Length: 545
Image 1 (cartoon, one colour):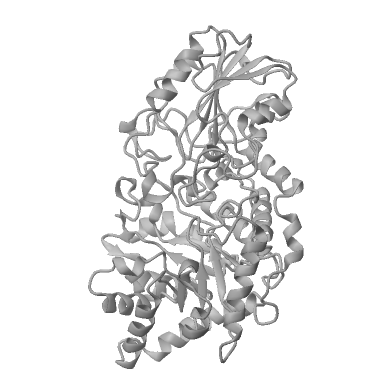
Image 2 (cartoon, rainbow, N blue to C red; image 1 turned 60 degrees about the vertical axis):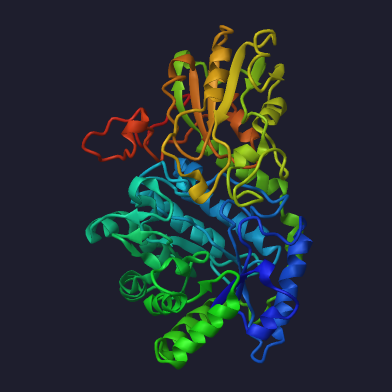
């Protein structure tokens, strides 16, 4: 029932404390190569085999858009982009490839898919959602689970999925991460529960409880939601994992935190470091009769079931024959397809797009030639990063590869006027963030982004704006300056998919999975609001046809 972070483990920790699970926090890596991961995993399993009952560990990572802690793995668009595709078969294939590349390094469990219904784009985890309606969480969440887990969870190339975060984390007041969702039970069930119902129908192996609260009560302490609804009413047979140190947020001292969480239905606790205290506390609670042995037996049975389903008792070491498929061209081709299908064409005055292949183009903006920026958070590191932090193709490099005309670049746009270009493209938007670090009450474009567009407009050339972001941004200050606008979301490592659409190899087919507000004051805005008047409505998207 104890899961700890890999950095807390020495050569005998698993053996000495009979630990059930290990995880890598965001960016926690044993090294840069797949072999480093496999060696670590196999070493941990050897410790598990040295225990009396030889029960293997289960190892979890946040492989939320590819095996994103591993350099060289393919990084797919984040969920908000996949939500634009409305393509469950594609999402299933993205998850299948993610599972294979993750399993190739030994890891058998991903804390994915996130299936919140995001109702306020100020939330820093907006991009982890498929969109603002329960239907998207149902359609694409189920597809992702099927891709991760396949038809047989015991196969070497499949991994356990985790539907998260139960429940309502996309509906918190003012879009605050780990905040409070104020809603009636009818609203909670109508908006935030359907995705989990479909996840359970897809036999999802695990569910992660949410940091957030429902009407002031922390989810990690809600026996009604975790046990009565999730396990008993919905019939969930897998196990419930806590979030990182989340039981510590329950009111009271540590002993009462553990007691409340376990009795409410948490089966495995992501400690993640102070495992000795957790184990001794829970043991004492059982000895004192505060937690029953029946509750412990239920939790352990659920955990063992998932380990049996994974085939860990038959074959627990890394299937290293899969390593050669990590980052393969076939996998990158699927990622590039996901990029193409995720793009949403918001504006196209005078049918400027598509551009002909021989058009002379000048690109500008902070996100035009930055691989880290276009991947967003949960990419190599928890908060993401800038520059060439892994292998991939920037948007600029994509244009250089697919165009037959001249391609020039200046970050600020000041080189556009004498570049000889026919068209100017500004690639602007957000820089990486994850979780609460991304919470923001101001979604306006930065002054630097606005200036880039103004500079390009002043050249008299047609201006295309490509927005790289994890959510809709307020674009009123550049709306009239842009002849064409494309929402590219966070495309991942395969930036050439953006160029392929702009240059007409493919017509854009993405449609908005979330309403695009006109101003900050309109937020939150969602389809079905009585005063619904967005800049671009939910489901909007132009094509070339």
